[in-house]
Image 1 (spheres, rainbow, N blue to C red):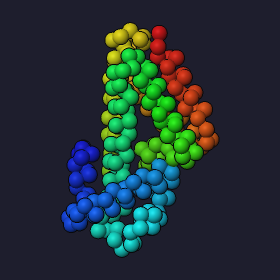
Image 2: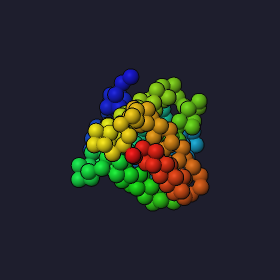
Image 3: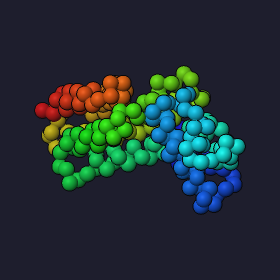
Image 4: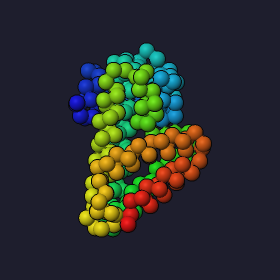
Length: 212
C-alpha cells in the first residue's frame, strides 16, 4: 500500500506548478474537504466546488486527472489535518494523564463539530458509509488511515498502562480499535441529531471502562 505522501505526489498535474496554480489547487482541496465532510463523495458536485473557488469548469482537469484523483487528494489532506490534531493532543507532555489527553482530543473534535452546527462529520467515516460506491482502491486507503489513527491511540493507552492509570490487563491494541469503532459511530449520530450527546456518551463510557 503506497503512503499518503506518494498518493499526493502522483496526482499533482504535470504542469501548472506555479505559485498561483498550487494555491488554486489547495483551495479546491479545501473546498472539497468542506463539501465531502458534509455530503460525502457521491453527492459532492464538482461544479459547486469550482464555483466556490472561482475556477472555470473546463479548468478542473488542469489540476486533477479525475474526480477519483481529486478525492484522493482530499483524503490525503484530511488525514494530514486529523493526524496533526491527534498528535497535538496525544503527545502533549504538559498533560500528565494520557487519558486526559484523549479527553482533550475529544473536546477539540466536539468543538469542531459544534462550530459547523454538526453539519460536518469525519470525512473517513462519511466515505466508509459509501464504500460500495467508491472508486476501486478507496477502501484500502481508508483502512490504512484508520489503522494509522489507531496506532496513535494505542501508544497513548500504552503510556496510561505504564503509568498505572488503566487496568494492566487491558489489551491496548484491541481497545484502540474499539475506540475508533465507537468514535466513528458517535460522530455519525451526533451529525444526525445535531448535538454532542452521542460523543459525550461514548467518551464517558470509554473512559469509565478504561481507568481503574
